[in-house]
Image (cartoon, rainbow, N blue to C red; front, side, top):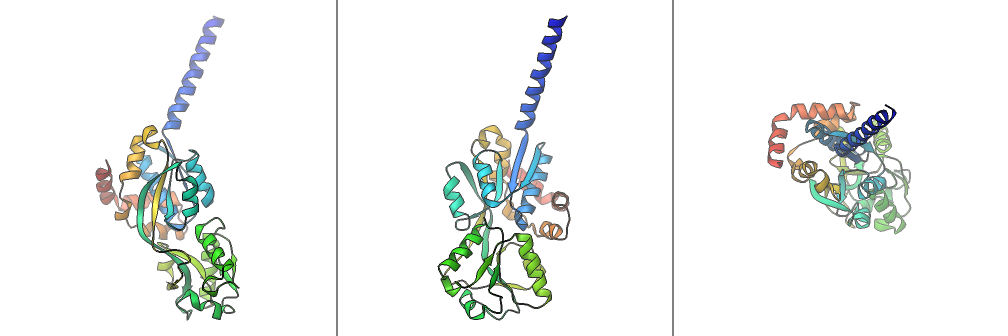
Length: 285
């Protein structure tokens, strides 16, 4: 009887281990940074993968940690790689350990952004108006490619901006500072990018950048871990073939900005765009 009990216990333990392994294989780990479009697209992807039967976990981290997580196989995918310039250092570091599936958004734009009432139009005019800006550029997270590019431009005095101070923060802090300044009609300069809901919220302009501090137009790419095509071929096919460029995520960005839970806004977006999404899913098979 004792031996039978031991055998049954061993069998149950084996079943638990096997079941756990099966569940682990069916979990998709998505990682992202708290950037407006990154939040939206990651959660929409998560909702679609859940509809395909997968257990999805979405995790917000810093930019460098996001890339490292996919490269090390701890996460399956990220959908917010800005290339070829903004994330060039991270791509160079990890390119042999990840798979670049190409753009999910094209013609993305970056630059120093000011409210339209600010009477300059070029980065080369910043230095002459440094006092109006309080000598500061209100930045985003320190690990972001835009932060590094801005700090390098200051260090090298590119376009004469060497006397500015770059104040690192986050996307949320930058946007809050921008909002407060606009309410007071104060001069403010921030690093910004399109797509971002703030361009629909306020009348803003990206300053001309003759020295290309942030490079030229970019794409936002999907990056997955190596081996995903073998471990989870259906998930790999979804990421590699689903044409995100045919979806306008702006309503999800606005809902997130207004405080809606990102997963809830993603579910709302999927429901509102069901016909188009079904068409894209069919084409991706």
